[in-house]
Length: 412
Image (cartoon, rainbow, N blue to C red; front, side, top):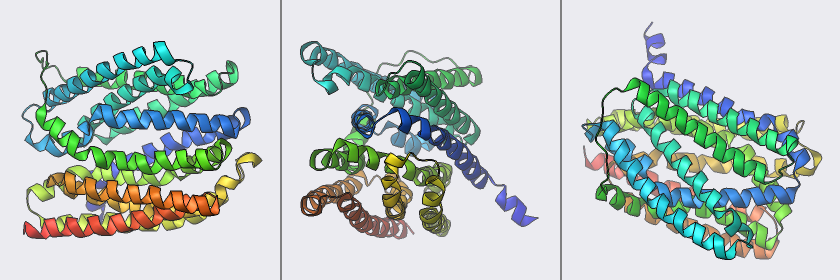
């Protein structure tokens, strides 16, 4: 009976909900991969990858670490919803400034491909920021069901819209651009509707700058950029030194590897409230147990997935993309270190060691890019990027785990 109660506690239940909903949400695009790879060439897939890089960059800039700030400060908010609106106001203000500048750039340089789609990139980044911020509220409330349902809605709506635009209207790369924007816009409206229905309290118009948010955002910015520097810049290196077609294959391999981030994020989303509460209450032993168990689960999941996933996917991919399956096991195994970093980052966030975190992650990302550049110039293949990524992630994980334990023990 005690085992059943333990299995059904809030954290474990939320892990299951996050995992199942994220798995289904990520599986939906996988189901359409045979269609996508049929209608898009590797070069067109590479162009989509470059668009995604742009969205990732400006998402980092626009959101300013607001979702992480909200989760860490949530226990201190007297009015959590009003605090959420303050962050949204700041995010919207920054977006409007960037969007105005993008329209000026577009009016003069729209013959350049990226400038031509720049306003669309910013719109996607803005609505994705809102999407993450509203989800943060429900994650902090440990309402995994709402988060799971909305994630499923976003995945289904954006995937179906992309297939409609790609197959029905022959939109090629732009099918991804407009389907992403449409899915995000609809999902944000759903989240706003749910929040308005559940909350009857009225708030005054909020138009103030949150300097604590800006300070946090500036501190965590290099850390956020470090994630993009790894995934974004390495894709640019591949497109520059190899080819856009190779980039398309590598990007597909990255998409296939996304089964691991969704698993890790499911664990992380469910455990963040518990980790923050344990640290706040100085329950050191319980915090260490949570960190150790979650790390062990990530390691086992990555090892098993590196064997099973490539075997399953070889039957559904178009022959033009089978090379992606060769890279897949190594990319999944290297995610072990990335997953450990994601889990232990919560400790550094809690103790406001964001500058230290940024130095480690941004520094190792710079080393990764330099190492990748040297290796890719020597070997001219994708393994150069994979090897460099694994080594630098390993080093970063060792440093951050050690620092996290030092911070925890110091508060004993």
